[in-house]
Figure 1 (cartoon, rainbow, N blue to C red):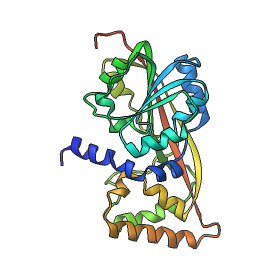
Figure 2 (figure 1 turned 180 degrees about the vertical axis):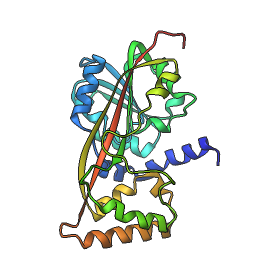
Figure 3 (figure 1 turned 90 degrees about the vertical axis):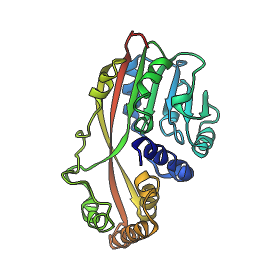
Figure 4 (figure 1 turned 30 degrees about the vertical axis):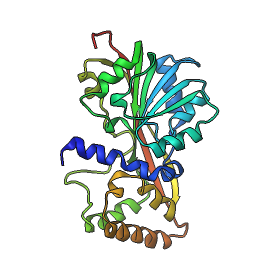
Length: 268
């Protein structure tokens, strides 16, 4: 399958798990939003554009801070959940593709939280540049799995089951510690349309029981794409192993890399 077709197929899988996504996906640290506002100089009332808001995990903290936000979300189910979660705020949720959507007015910030990698690489920076006012900013970040020293050993132990079902880690890959997540400073600068002003890393932890953790995995595109027997084997083993623990829970550490870039004054 062509990489673009595969990206589109996986991109749309999230909509099938809209309610699940809203319930189990983590929010982001308040410090990330505080830093974002300080780095961009945003003030309450500014108009922001969010790319791929999903159920509104990154929208609500900014809406509460008094910003006007337009969200463009591909999935109809996710868009509906987001409208419900954001009712009463100055937020409009548009169902559609960011690559094809035209804003009514220039915005002060275009941002994407765990969504930028789904947008067509040939178009995303150009479309963000076109949506921004002169001097506006682009902010992108994503939540990923990190493995602190002294973290839960469960993830190393369960890796044998992933290997067994043919979903093991690629050769040469390793578990990254907090602060070690890769950034895309080079990719942003290579667009020629933005100047990176800051890259910052954050980490936090969530505790899940077996069913909550299985629900979380069920919102990841790779797990959604698994065959039935693979999921049955993996989820059964997760339930069995966590049932043996006194607390019956798993501690998952999350990390995120915030990129903030300023729009260059170039011909778009």
